[in-house]
Length: 346
Image 1: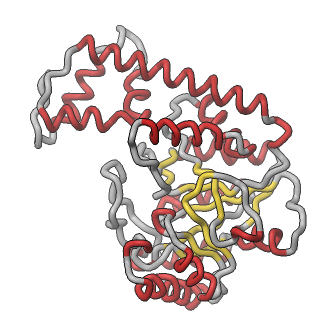
Image 2 (image 1 turned 90 degrees about the vertical axis):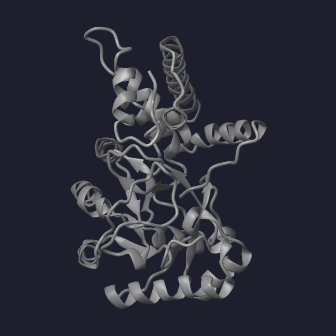
Image 3 (image 1 turned 180 degrees about the vertical axis):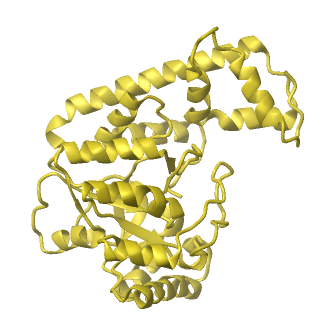
């Protein structure tokens, strides 16, 4: 198959080609695994370069993706087996962005999100807002058993339309970080190619959620990478976003989330001076103490790389008990050895 660059039919031609590899009457698990396992860039490169894709080569690649998926499932099964006693002794902060079926880097499907919330309910978990979480740290108290914090970055409209009804159904609360200059618009800030222009929540939706017990924090004005702009502009992002949300909701805003998960000591100090009680960095982990209230770690619940329900739930359990950190650290070391940059939270 030859893919011609710049034509809308490229994607259909690729899909049709790969679909032809499945056995008669078989399911498209191979196709799903291939795209969901982060290999879309390879397909895109073929389209742009117009390279001939040998049928045998695609069969080999899909076989490799199947083996990778199986090895990941086995790996997380082992982690969860070794860490059962930790499941209820740590209180993780879970990170979500968009709840949709786009399969992007920051997306979790609605069915997957429902499965995860159902699991929390069945295991009698209770949710804390991020402010409540930090208050426990500040008072040096113990967290209630089986506690978890659910957070959403950016303020996508599907947080209201999809996630909010599910959270309400199970009696859960969450903390959502808003990018205020995009309220009621579409996200158009700098992002990876696989993240679509998703609609953002409106202020009316935010007020409704706030009245129902959801907490809101700031993600800045424009989703600017704070380390790339002058400190004066950083302070404007930090202060104006806080005051805007407070004026709209009539509530004090206590939490901040650094866009792209990056910050330095000057930015952290500016966030503290602006009156926030805590802030989240783009560090994958759950080791939070009083000393790092402005560099909180979270568990990034990005399960779109794991196709079947069993594996998705294994990954989620590993995020709850903290053992998923080992998988992330291994990937970071592998990326470092290959000379590739370590990805950060978007």
